[in-house]
Image 1 (cartoon, rainbow, N blue to C red):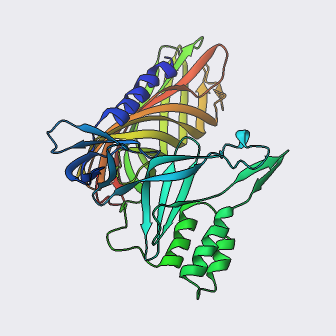
Image 2: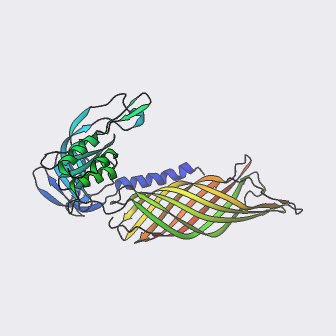
Length: 405
């Protein structure tokens, strides 16, 4: 069976649902004329700042798409807020292979939706992400538009330079709004362009976030652990006396892992990383020969998952991926027709790769799923092969409770 052909449709289905399904959330838009329209926004997993938003007056009403020429503000209640500003956007890239040979100072003026990250007493922090890079913008009290925090990166031969102009910009704001914070200058000198670092400095400069301005209650990471049953099958193919026969057994499994949600407050698309321990015992007999094989397997799998149905209390999900298996074989013995015993009969692979597809449901913090692991080679003979496959039924407990969709 061609694994690529088997799993490509599954992955395509996940991406289709990820892009096609609606996720209506309460919210509102403000039109260019100043009218406020309350209803429902199709809350997508926006990896880049959106240039349009789909809005419905009611959940049953047809959706209308608004662009940045028609609205100046929109908000998904309790989750995300976007303001329309005409700002200067730096054009340099962060892709290492495309870094310029000298500092790129080119920019463009454009009206874009900026995502509100923090609103304090004296400043507001926004983010803007497009196909080039992530940018941070800060707007000071009394000013009419935000200013980009610059972070120029370029190279000279094999040497990469990073000017970190944002440190100078933040120091100026610190001296204006927090002149008595002696430690703040040293914190800025050690800062990087990551969200945690920039947000921490903004809070030092301008105090705690204003009531109601904090967005995003769900953490991107979710841990889980559980138990289950694994139905394991070992089979032979090619020129072997055991070809045509297969052996199966049912064994307990234990596992756990970590989910990484792409957009935590949407919670539909996420990357699941799983570690699992299982055992397999197989016995074969043919023409007076017998073979006993026992496998202890430690597996690490990464899958792309999507919640097709997604509410805080109930979710139906599916996903596909691949993983690395690390195996030992404490039993690998053939007994011949005259009683000849051959230890370590098969030259088995200690490290091997397999694919997986999985689907299940989650009710509150409990999740039950069924996974299929197609046949994968655990030997590397030229004339014949030994393959392993399994079905796994899992019961997991999700440790991080999600507060919304």
